[in-house]
Length: 84
Length: 183
View 1 (tube, chains in turn orange, red):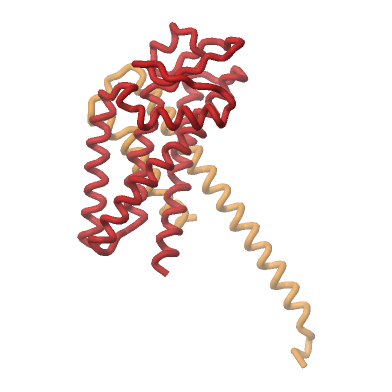
View 2 (view 1 turned 180 degrees about the horizontal axis):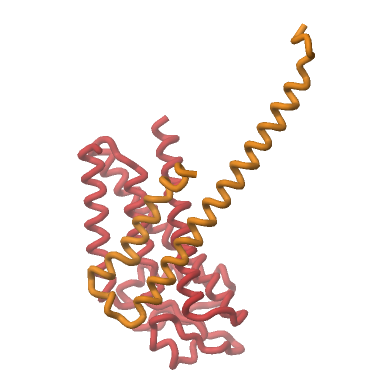
């Protein structure tokens, strides 16, 4: 999960800089609707990061389960006395 | 970090600052290079027909008339009969600038020739990705509007989700492509 979050840092960081930091630097923070814009951006970012992490974790869990099942099957195929 | 990589990122960041300055004062006609292909793709994707209107952008007037739409932050859309407008605020230039930086960072060029090549690829890739992602964003907004779902806040949230999702997918694809190329 940490690796996934580290990979997300580049697109999320760049998006936040362009959507929030640069407008603030250019003086947009004083605009009446800027708080709503910020809220929309932050909620959207949390939703996307949360969705990617959740989907990634589900895929990891499914793959781990599939590996476990495959390993159990191959272990059962080996006879107790070992391969003849 | 190598000098060519630093130079490529610096050029991309300079493009972001220049692009933001250009976007602040750009008219619909000046942004036609982004708005025109987007309008064509949205028309095809949603089975609508956006037509160019000088000084405004691209307008879709449905035959049966839908509830007039008030695009967020675009006051002129409120007092028009148009059902949907693709105005300069919808051009997706912010996404294009983000995509440009993301593609340059993903490329991680090791030499000067690779830096020049990755910048050229990043510019073309960012433009193509902007048309695709912006078409998806506007097509979803048109469908939501047709079903009378949401308002300005949902439109803003949908934009963030589609743009950031597209950016993450673009970065992931670019990393894989460049890793495959290096192997």
